[in-house]
Length: 160
Image (cartoon, rainbow, N blue to C red; front, side, top):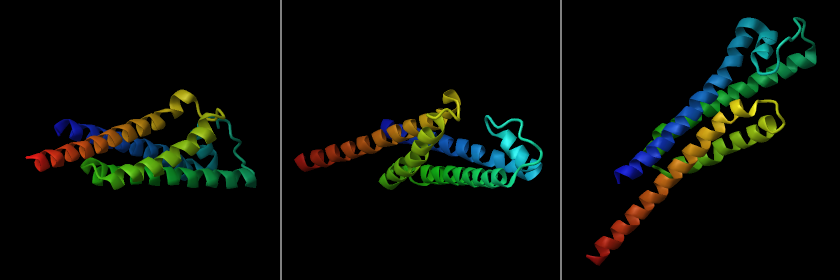
């Protein structure tokens, strides 16, 4: 039973790391926006160096759209940590399914919207999805092994 606990707790830790990563990625551009304005925020993003001091209105709107996106990333990071600490850490099925589906959707859209088109370098962008796959795999194994353990426990008590 101890190895089962270790498995899903390591999965929870992986989801916590996913959450911290997304909070940092989400907040960093917002700090740059508040301290350096739109140009500073855009320059803080990968591949956006050399933004002119005078930003036209469409680019300004795009900057606030990007800021909203990063705020949402930070919110997903907080959600991942709360679910990992409150549910995955206790091997609860709701935690497994919540992080599997919600974080999977976040990473799926990131992979197809940022990594595959080449907007984010693969080596940098793959870190979050790796934490996701590890978290999903380990919490899934922990949940499956706990169910198998309890099933065999019930069959032994019925036979005895």
